[in-house]
Image: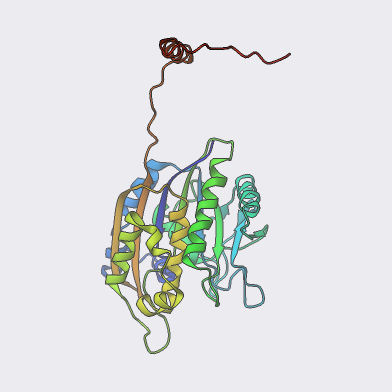
Length: 314
């Protein structure tokens, strides 16, 4: 049976991708950002996921104002990097997992979440930058990746509660998949930032850090944050944090916080990152059925109860 072992959040600032591609990661401005993900890459290398479900938002690469799906699940065998105006990023083609993706689509849609199924799609920095931060820059990505694109660009975006419940439905789907797979769910985007208007450059560290706390301790409280509150407290683009709630909904209620990192700014954005592991299930020692039955018979005899064996008809 497949199982979700952990969830990860990461900003997907396009300038981070440019710093990687232009070999600027050791420059003083960028070194503090990338140094915060060194432990994360070690953790991911040890976790060895078979599949990553990457929740991200498209930036007019695969979709446009002509077609705006709220939730779009990539079910293709591969997803090439998109040309975002200066050529595709020099990153590996993302290899999908069509079988698991199709299983998730069927399970989630029958649970009354109306996903858009995408069988051909290019992926942009929203997905590839977090992969770089967690895996480095390998010649090919070390695991399969299922993209889940969420509309947080055009109004109305989904609510935090809807995203959290979608994560719950995804967990159910993954748990019912028969193949033995280790799955990590990534929520990308955020944290507080605004790229235009009078408040361009806004960063609210207090809000960001409280949100990271909530992911670990009380995610259901985060689902009550309205669109207006996201915009007021975290800037116009802060709404991207609802995607982190899909990741959190896909995890168990109680999780272990393994690592956290926060820094400002990267370009004009607050960079937030957290790794949450599901707790290992506790196995209870149980007596053999024969012994349990014997104990039951003894208790019944002590109370003067006559036991009758019932055999099924052949």
